[in-house]
Length: 369
Image (cartoon, rainbow, N blue to C red):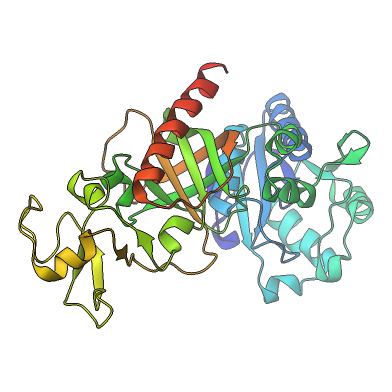
């Protein structure tokens, strides 16, 4: 699919069949329109096209990012996607001018396809009725699609957004016509998962709506390959504690990394924790040599961990049987089923043991699909 971000560089396409809309989330109602566009363009020996807008004209929280939206549209077989930057200048364009100066003059559609509730132009004054009136003078056809309903309730991005946030993946999946998914960029985290024995990909979800906090069995799409895994969404309450009890054995056994610190304060705690690492000042690389300051930490005392922002939601995915450097790549997480709620653990050892159980349970769920 060719994506065009500038109307000035838009070339002329053969007999365009054009869909107009935001298509946030690309749910069943959108899929109905877009599949029809592809089919009708094929029959007309023309070009299937989508004209969409970003950011959301109604300033709503996006169900999925623009990149994710375009990926989903592309998967439906659309030839060309035109993305208009919905800024203040564009928002001030009257509906009639949008039809005449952009749709007709620049695209010259053979057929326009829209949902019945589609609105456009300044103050949302444009409607399917206006497009029908203009079709008589500008020689294009118009197909208006009725709102798709499930259980007598209209399918909408707003409804799906609410379902995903509260964790109702089954209902949301039915309305989307696909798995609930999140697309994001793989970023570098604190590497604690790897040190616990479970490498994870930390995801920047591009401000997409993500499911409720908890642990999920998931599919992962990385490039053209599909993997299975387990995904954690939450605020890391175990790490977010100001103090977490750590047993000497947990450090010696490699369950958690030892801290880097500089001296101790009057309470016997480190003055500063710089980073998570495989060893700290006072130990050799095997953790054998202990200074008095280190001894204070290791005798069942409290261990100050790296601070996390309150209520900051993190997304981490452990990909089964995978160990490659993938920072900076885009990754799509497709949610299958929720395994459990987010929990706070008393120690890193307890967290590690629970992760093992989560992985076993996730594999069992995925094997049954």
